[in-house]
Length: 170
Length: 380
Length: 71
Image 1 (cartoon, each protein chain N blue to C red):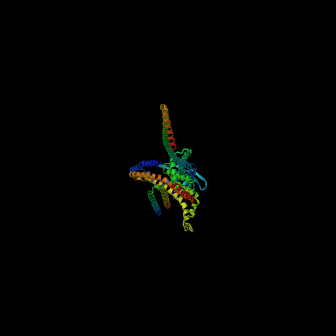
Image 2: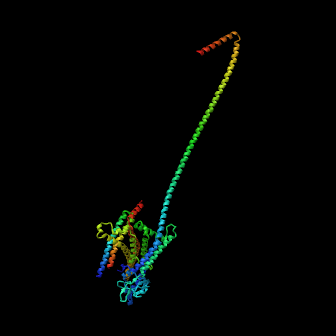
Image 3: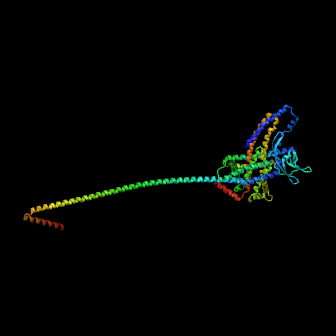
């Protein structure tokens, strides 16, 4: 059958045409297209990777900032707390100091008052003593006008001294 | 677009045909027709087989259409080497109607029917060395030009804006999509790890076949030649695959052929398996050749036969002819759609089988290891 | 006699085509069932199916070519 017999001329021309097409396309056609397709694929892949990385980084940054905010919050709390404590401490300290001061002042005043009272008492006693001495002088002078009474007094005084010494000896 | 053209052509056939039928009826009814016309009409009995074969087979001129008695065709150069060893180159229009030119004429019958033969002195017909640019060759050149134009234009566009990594639109986008699907669907999975080496060849084969198939479906002049439905063309393609498989075949591949891993009694003393494997070496490209050839040939033949229904029923009266024409058009449209699919599918199958054969010839222990690793990597 | 030869060749072609049709139908059926069962490997199955169908078709075409030559 003619259809199943390849013609020599046609074989030659087909080989030539296919060879030329194959050469041209392998040289200038497909490698260029394949390369740029591959490059684009790589570019897309790397872009996706970069996007992923950026996302991860963003997440990390968000986490970091959250952590920072939290930390700042905690610090603020701490500062507030310590400030409160400090205030309390200062207040209590001041109160204690003031109380002490007040106590000291009161004590001093009391001491002074006591001293003054004693002074007054001492003064009063001296005056009373001087008055008593003056009075007893006057009384003695009145009583010792005669001899007899003088002797009597002397006796009594001697007795008294005696009893006093015995008391001490005893 | 091509499809639309196909439909338009078929519709125009439909539109023209009833006129023909009516005139014939009128002729029959009038009975005042000249004898010669009647005789010629009877002589013009449509020979479907002849029409189909004349399209499918190669010819020395590119017949476009016939208007009445006038045949409009493009003469093509005839290049033959005569018995005496000199080359003759002349237009095929010199050989019309069995004319003899420089001792050559187209044989009417015999073993070389339809081919150029040389008449020797003793009246014998000898087939000269024939390198004529026949219809198939001319169609092949046109199709190659189209293919080169498309691919090189796109490639130039890619080269020109290399740094623009955006996806291309238009023709480049379409071509890229097809290339990517061929790469990802056939070449990378079938060839294996060193697919890069064979990708340009396989892509060229794919697009060569695809473009030739599609161009064969366009019924208008510069296209429409039955290129991939010619066994010489498919033979060259199959040979290319054969060489690609066997030249780059590895040691393991040859060992698989001559010392396959089968029970020893199948190899010694009668090498049954090696013989089968060795025959398989040739039947693989042979089946590639026959498959492409037969599919495209059958497609062309079916479409032509369906179109011929219109003219074959022309003498059966207007009603039958009209109905059959409608059937013919519908079936032709359907077959054209199917042939579009077949055009792609055959290119796809040819490329896939070539890739599988090449991949099998690239098979080595190391590669198997590598493929496993790659698979593991992809799985991970 | 020649007519008988033609008849024989066409019958042989018909039988070859029957064989191919049977084989390809079995492949198509098996692939459809398999991809209905496991849709995730449908692409891989399709590729394998085309290869297997192409091999069968190759044999059938081989037979048809022989018939053609006998014609």
